[in-house]
Amino acid sequence: MSSPSKRREMDLMKLMMSDYKVEMINDGMQEFYVHFNGPNESPYHGGVWKVRVELPDAYPYKSPSIGFVNKIYHPNVDEMSGSVCLDVINQTWSPMFDLVNVFEVFLPQLLLYPNPSDPLNGEAAALMMRDRASYDQRVKEYCEKYAKAEDIGDATEDKSSDDEELTEDEYDSSDEQVAGKADP
Image 1 (cartoon, rainbow, N blue to C red):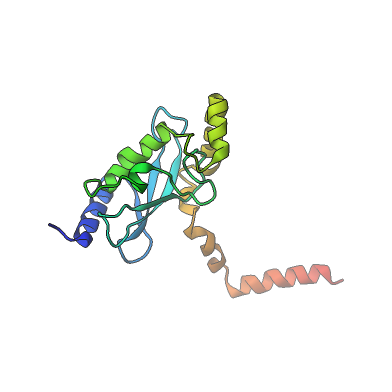
Image 2 (image 1 turned 45 degrees about the vertical axis):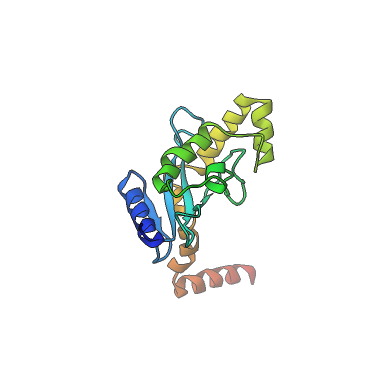
């Protein structure tokens, strides 16, 4: 029987060798981002999400923590935190599953077959049950606004790097210009 750390490495390598872009968060193999495309034949088609994955020390005996970084409109995803409500990840996880299962089966199934009776986003659930066409339209609007391939690189790391790119001279010159204009 292999150790959890060997299994973690093997599953991560398997995911990296598939068609998914994987970005490591730290030096370890426990936290990373995966770029996830919305499934074909769904209102999520064309959307690309950055999904944060955290592997617990007891992985694969304990399920990974999965969360969307950029916004997604879905009854079973918390709009603010990106947390996912999915039985197979949260309650019925088995060591027989691996990370590729999460991205090739579980998440696509979640997007294709939302469960509005167990929502994390009550508004999305209500709209889906009341007016499916309007729900699908809202999903597409969120995809256009928050889930473009060129945007997900900016979803986390690049927000803080903007400040680092300004030199001390640029900070000083911009302050002087504002101060000069305000004082006649």
